[in-house]
Amino acid sequence: MNWLTIVVVILSIVLIIAAVFAVYQKDLLLAVIGTSAVSVVLSVLFYILQAPDVALTEAAIGVALTTIIFVITIKKTKRFEE
Image (tube, rainbow, N blue to C red; front, side, top):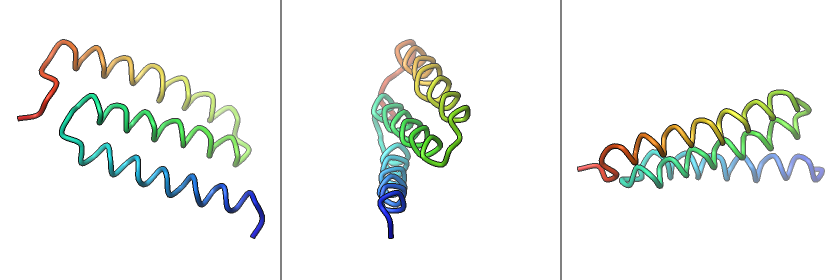
């Protein structure tokens, strides 16, 4: 196994952990942080897999825009799930 394969496997494990964290989180703000972490890891994976255009799009939309929209929405509603 070369170093690239090891990095992809480690990032895939981090991706799964962040996704499970986001799904099982009761606090909505922490769930948004988890989905943002998923987007960051996906951006890095796309870049490693030689798709820089997809990586930039995922970083711009997934990390920045979606997270901002979710945080604004949570701010205007209840933060905790009952």
